[in-house]
Image 1: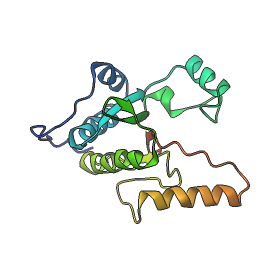
Image 2: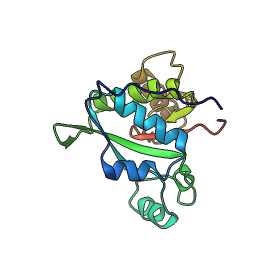
Image 3: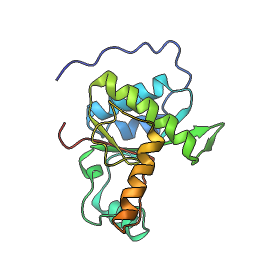
Image 4: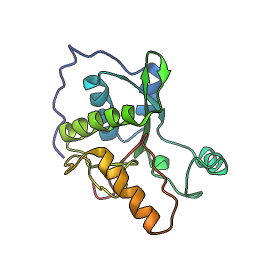
Length: 165
């Protein structure tokens, strides 16, 4: 594994809160650094809403329909993070703002040389080398799910270390 290059934070607009930092401290250090770099280069505030998760918390999420698999999650191992954008102090759940988040995570993944999968396009094993727009990947996934007669479940907030990294 190659050493992570230093990032120039001098022009950084937003910083992760102490609570977000605490969540990152429980993650795989490569993923945590990726999120820190993403925030450093982002022109919007990022909020880490979930990092490493307990099995009991996961079971509750499943009961509420927040997750698909009741027994397993990469969150258990600190290999996944859920991030939402905050603009003017408001959580923004609009699609376009998540495209900004995946874009900065893409650049941070390139910088850290970390293979990351994004929940908005789970069919793409590595967001470092996109061949088209993020929106097109989302549409491709939705179309594939519909063809397979399955309900599309996009997790625009979710990023995880690729299984083969």
